[in-house]
Amino acid sequence: MRVAILGRGRMGQEVARLARAAGDEVGLELDVAENTGGAGLTPEALKDIDVAIDFTTASAVIDNVTRVAEAGKPIIVGTTGWYDQMDAVRAVVEKNGTALVHGANFSVGVHILRQLVAHAARLVDRFPEYDPYVIEHHHNAKIDAPSGTAQRLGEAIIAAVARKTHIESRAGGGAIASDALHVVSVRAGSAFGHHEVGLDSPADEIKIVHSARGREGFARGALFAAAWVLGRQGVHEFSHILEEEGS
Image (cartoon, rainbow, N blue to C red; front, side, top):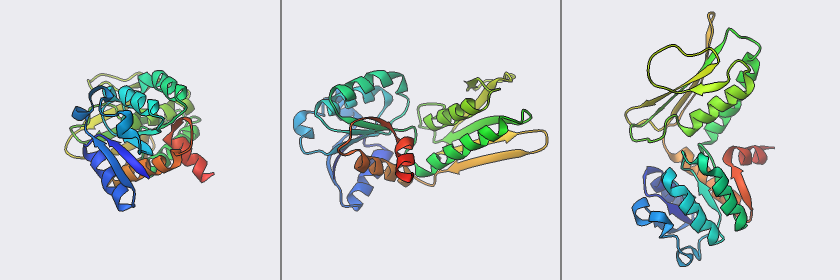
């Protein structure tokens, strides 16, 4: 597999390292500054590329996807914070008959966490004394808050718990409405990613926690998705392809 890696940040570097270790070829590496508006993703640059992997910034995603799709290549997008542009991204992928896999988190462990949280949320829907919440902690350079993973965990809870209707993620003080799900973000130090879902009641508290020990798990997930997407079409979510592989 010959990959193009978009973004030379910490995640991009880890994907490149693992790709080479697995015997794949990194045919193109572009940092954000080298690829303004997708300018580095020319048909010539992408000619021998099998799949692109994007870990850049939310503002760069639509240009990167457009250029890669127009070259007839699939793309894996591990960048978060761009989901309000999903309709435009889906349209360009479908127009060019290519494929895209996106995910708020490419860790297999986080996918398992999400399934556990969804199941727990269905159980506590019957017991109003339990009040769920989400806490996420990432390094102090992470831009989006709450994280895409925390957002998805919150959405899974809201989908299952009728008494929770919306996410409240404000950082200021004050009481939280009873129908709000509080999602808290911490930006400090160099944490790779810590997500905690709590179910708090007067009698006890349940916690479901995932803590990443490094970026390797995320990079391996992205490379798994890159191999999976070859020869496919359409827009796919990473968690869905994991469910498909496990069924």
